[in-house]
Length: 298
Length: 304
Image (spheres, each protein chain N blue to C red):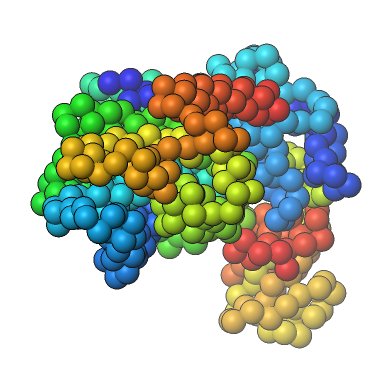
């Protein structure tokens, strides 16, 4: 066991023992569940069926599978980022409680401390998101399962990428926070705001053109789209097999953010992976540089 | 005895506020050094600079013959610090807390288990290892703070108001442990405290005010310089006391006379043997020294 391993273990234990932090991280997914259970599920169910030609009738299982997959993709896309932020608040709480000062009187390397927070957040967030993915997949299996094994594998890869993104972004932002008030403010903004900007509450396609174009600049938008694609492409293929014209399928994909456009140009999935990969690498690089710079200051 | 801490012409400002002004003093190896001052005098700033938490504006600090500017990481291995407020994780157990703090010094695996058993015995917290730190009493938590500071066997133990808020019994226990460590391991203790009776046990005392040294010396030197002696006379009549022509005050069943020093007290007794049948001579207290030096009294941590 190394110093890093023990520090990572400490950080993970603290996150799961701090009920405040743990439950705050689950607020957005919980809001989504409530929204879908109360009305959003029915709204989407009606909108899918009303767009279909009268001659086509879809089975209940397909419609439920589509709505269920949308719910799953929304929950997972949001959780990967909001859970990462809340988990990484430990870094700030340690500053507030004087624990960072206690750490820094020891000869421990500053990089070891920083990476222990990053890795612990990554692991805690992955644990929660993978458990959430398991529950969501079980739910989709009950209401209407059309996913292939490759879809599931790619969905897990998307989760990993988005968690890496959320962890790196939160590490950078949290580095500048130092009070409990700032934790609350950022926590509230992320919990309430991220669900909107990633299109979890309402698809980005339903927003105004200006906002859509702005959101196209956010790398996380492509992460959400990847999750949507891999959650829904099975059920959409099945719809096509049952005779739904490909134009209608494309329309549904547009409306559900499976197809994303950067100034009228459709972004394919390979490009989405490249954007997310480069963003994650850049954010981790910035985090390392910021730590080096801060260390230089004192 | 060699100097283990040497501070020369240290300066530190926070904007317009000069927290430390040309501060210079030395601490000898193995001694109990008391660093006194009211809140805001610059004690914690000095400690934070020594520990590498704050950058100084100017000056020179040498710890165990190593320049702080050049060997900060090595020096950190030689310092153990007990902060004013506990810096442990409240929701983790004592064991988990000490495991993570020991790891900072590379103490892991079997060496960690050996050391924790050793410290648990010395500081009597064997039965607390599985308890959550947040549920410990103030005294129990302080013992764990001290264990954390001692884990890597530091040469210098910095105690920043370690006994504030503790009951007398716990304070006594902590001081007994620290005294034993000093004796057995020749550890230097750098103490800040608001309890003057603790400071009077020190080998050397530095009093600072507004970031500057106001007085320094052994407790005896300081008492001799800044306070007089007291003669307490029992069973005497007030008219006899008045006849001595010396400032006095009546206490429960005695009278207390203030004299400049022991020599004057001796002369007074020799001149008036009839009055001095039952009496005692005591030195002034560190509280009196502090009051005389800074013009401010300290009562349980608060300036008065």
